[in-house]
Amino acid sequence: MLRRRDWFRRKGATIGWPSLLPEIIVVGPYNLVDAPQTIGFGENTVFVTEDSRLLPYLGAWRRAPIHFDVNVQIGLNTVICPGVSIGSYSTIGAATLIDRDVPEFTVVVGSPFRVAGNFKKQLRRRIDELTEHPERYTEEFPFFGTAMPFDDMPLRSETWCRPDTGETMSNRIRDFIRGSAEGIWEALQEPDEFRASEQRIRIMRKQGYAIGDHCYIDRRASIDYRSHQVSIGSHCSIGALVTIVTHDGFCANFTGRIRSQPIRILDGCSIGASAVILPGVTIGPASVVEPGSVVSNDVPPYTVVAGTPAKPVATIWDWLAERRSEAEAHPDQFVAEPRMRPYPVPPRESIPPDELPRVDADRPRARTRA
Image 1 (tube, rainbow, N blue to C red):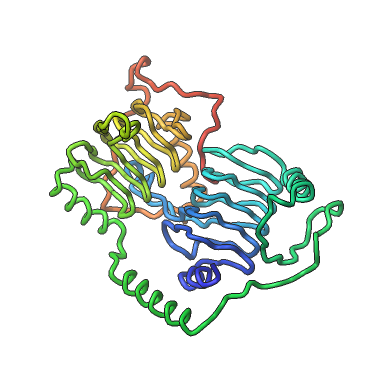
Image 2 (spheres, helix red, strand yellow; image 1 turned 120 degrees about the horizontal axis):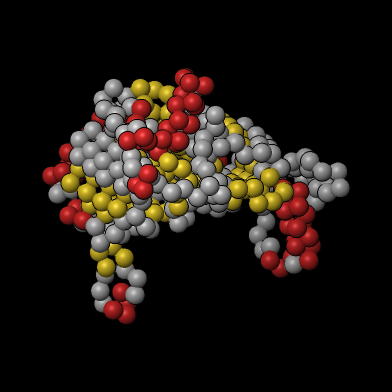
C-alpha cells in the first residue's frame, strides 16, 4: 500500500501520510484528488474527476477536484463524483454514491447517499464491542496516534509506529520491473479519451454491435460480448467501468440453460461511471443513469434514475437545469468537447402530459456540488 501511495503521488494525486491506499480507480486527472492525511480507502473505490455524463447534452466534460478532510474512512466499491468535499471524521459505507458534499462527523450510506448516523456514536459502539468481544478482533493494525476529537473517549495507547515495509533486494527488483511495465503500458495508451472512444467504437461496429453516431464509450466500460444483443443509439455516452450484461446464469446449475435478453440504449442516453445494466433492459431516449446505479427494469424516456435498484429521481429537464446552474457557477470545471454533437432534447412543453416521466418526489435526488 505504501508503494501504491507513492505511485499515485507521482501521477499527481495528493495522498498524505498516513493513509491506506488499496486497489482504487481514478477516472480522469490524478492531480484533482486531494487527500491530505489519515484517509482509509476501501478496495475498488472509484474517484471520478472527469465526468462524461454531460457530453450528449452540453457537449462538455466536467473536470473538478475531489477533496478530503482528515480522518475519513471510505467503504469498498464507493463511487465519488467530481467537485465534492468530504468532511473530517466521516465514514462512508460500502457501495455508496457520493454525489454531493459529506458533512463532518457523519456516517453516510446509499445510492445516492443519506446520512445514517453519527461518527461519535459509531466509534463508541466499536470501542464497546472491542472491549466486550476481543475475540472478534484477531488482527493488529499500525496505530498512528491520531488525536481523538472527543475528550470522553481517550486513545487506547500513545504508540506511534510505522509498518515494516519488508524491503529486500527481491522486492526492489520486482518494484523496478512492475514500475517499468506500468510506465510502458501508460505510454502505449491513447492520451485523448475521445479519440480512444472513436477507435473502440470502430472495432465494436466491426464485431457486430449496433452503435449510432456521435457516441462516447469509455475504454474501461465492460460490454457483453454478445454483440447482436446490444444496441446503442446516437448521441450516447457510456462512462468508465459501466457493465452492460445481456445474460443471466441464475439457476443454470439446475436448468442447464442461460437466459440471454437484448439491451437497448436509445438516442441521447448517458450512463454514469460504475453503473450496471442488466439483461432485457431498454433505456428510453434522453435518459440518464446516475453513477453506481443498477438498472434492472426499463427506464422511461426523459428520466433520470439512480440507486440499487435504479428508480426515477428527476426528469431530464430538471437535471439539465441543475447542471447548467453548476456550469454557470463553476465555468472553470466544464471543458467543451467540440467533437461531440449534443442531442436535441425536446422542450418539456412538447411532450404530451401522459408521456411525461413520473418521479418519486420523496426519494433523494442525485446531485453534484453546486
